[in-house]
Image 1 (cartoon, rainbow, N blue to C red):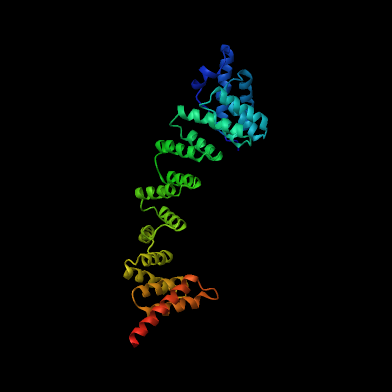
Image 2: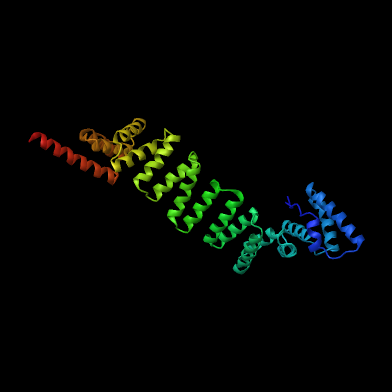
Length: 328
């Protein structure tokens, strides 16, 4: 179905767009213009077209009529006419009819046309600082042209218009990440969580982001604890929190409780068995550590994780040393 936009009010067009018509012509134009709009709004699109064309014959310099004819040409896939009508509508009333014209220019493969569209939209945005749709389209245009720093500047404007929210934070994250600004990208996620700490989706995203960027154990622990606060049975997070506590040799009793819960639920998981075995080693129980590490190796199959093998050798050596001290 043809999606025709509701036009600007007649009063907003008269002074700038309509040439001097006779009284009779003006009355005719108004009558058919409003009748066409009535039909369009009641979704009688085809019936409205002859009336739109009649209005164009009376006044080809009306922006709204040119825009409507551009939309009809779009449905009919007449690219040449569509381009011309949208261009003309924009020239007659750029503040009202920038969208179709500029989107069309941006979709072209001509870089010069794309850059011209962006320049014109940027000028309009300077004049109309509260137009969210204009700024959103401008930002998409900057992204299309890979001008991500300018897209970030537009996001500042969008936040002042729409307010700062989860979508803003995610867009800022993506743009910083694309610019390979890792610290700023992570900051945007952390910044939003300061405002909305109970947002589970963002907490998970922060956790994954920390893992991908290999953040320090201190930061990992904060992220994992936040997840467990909302999802206390998340077995993967329980293991990872326990492991990061091991790395810092902190709160090992709590780490043992977490890790024990994971092997009770998945007693043949070599990763969880390795974590528990290593915690027991750090707690000084080398015999228990060796037992769980042997099981980790057993359940690993033919390919034992290098880290598990390293832990096993270290615990075996420590146990041998303990036995030697006992004997002598």
